[in-house]
Length: 172
Image (tube, rainbow, N blue to C red; front, top):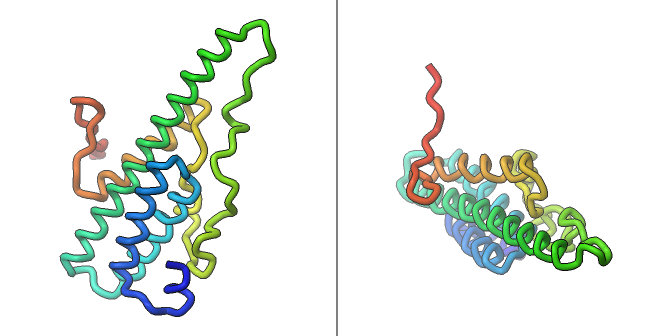
């Protein structure tokens, strides 16, 4: 995909959809930095295409697909954070007198640099700030949740938590 970018031989919507599909794959494998890079690149490419033709149904469909991928990414990151936290608690309880377990903040998921997959694509700062590390406290988990919620609403699907609907706040 980066070769397509460097050669400028791509169709923006197809490229964005393919990047989002790869992001879903990387999310499933727990490669959150690489998934984040693909999602940010996908959204950036979509924004470029939106400037050309906002009324196209394929743009809306692609937007919804990428937004769903971002929502799924946030959910997977939160679930992985919870599982890591639970495992860490079990380890600490079992080894209370032994050396303390490694801190979750020190866990390295990926060794990649920011947006190393697509260096020629100018990704906006708000997309570069998408979390890609496991949450170690409530504030980090909240940031991941709010990011996922934001993009889930962009997809046109109403997000749920279990059987409860999560609706946006309506300001008067």
